Image 1: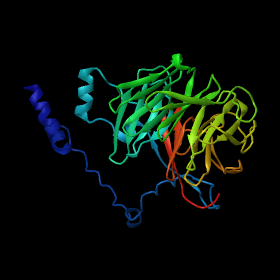
Image 2 (image 1 turned 180 degrees about the vertical axis):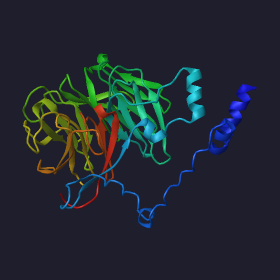
Image 3 (image 1 turned 180 degrees about the horizontal axis):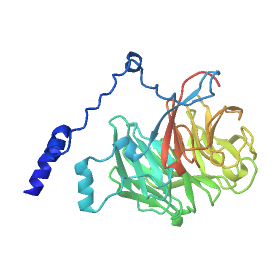
Length: 351
């Protein structure tokens, strides 16, 4: 009966519990009422979203949000966590090293995870999260055409076509000339694949047939020195990150060289480790500078308009960024070492 008495004492108010234990009851604690000014005090205002350039100049780019599996899907419920314990799966999903980004016609965001052997899929409208497993060693580029998904598996020298469930439809590999496929862009009925080791761009049909290629090793116009990424502009032109020549090269859709810009350096508008590239609907060119943790925006003459980002882990900051994609005025940047995608918005006006 001792446990029952103890339970009953624990359930009593403090004064009665003390009396039942033979001790004098403690005097009640009287707390002063809050002053009227304290009661009326408003909660602190939320921190302002980062913008570039900062005030007092007119903002052109603003930070919108970060994307990762837990942030979009949410943490599991109590019952979900218990199920994980019994099933032996106790970890939240995460991106290990996000790189390439594509936005599908349904506005879902597809993120290639280099070492996660997966493509992460975010439906931000619902919101919802899922992942498509990819049997590969180094997933770099990703493109979406209709219900089909295309990825480059760089180390395995493969371009892989997948259906909506992640089942392999066809593969282009070393036997067809691919050496180290990386960047990937889709245009109409064909794919443009950057082959870094071969120093060229390979054109592949949606049926997996290799159609043509352009580029060679060198530093002259139309030549490459370890290119890495590619983007399609609204005018149909191709924009290639010629990484070790520290420049951007622009081609027609047929692979004819048009112009280039950029140089090695650590100043604004220079390149030290250019990576992902994208072009918005107004023709502005966005280049991820992986070493300096910024995104640089240029016009099509190569004139620097603006840069945004900066090293760190806070909202709007980047750490070893890689890929980039733009839909309308939303800019998605793979914040690789922070294991997230950061979303920015171009808010108008000329930088």
